[in-house]
Image 1: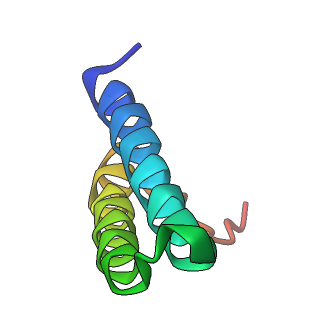
Image 2: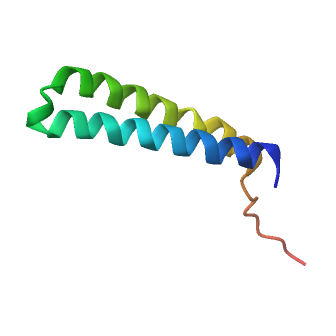
Length: 69
């Protein structure tokens, strides 16, 4: 396993858990943490956005060209 792949897995897991916890905080009225849940959800979403440059660096795009032989 490459080091970059491990970083993708860790960032994705942490970002997903933080985002899910924030959504739970927003949607469960007994907790009364709506505003805090929004902040936590945005932080989790930003962590997930950090994964995009890492993914693009490790998985380059394939060249789609027509070769005439």
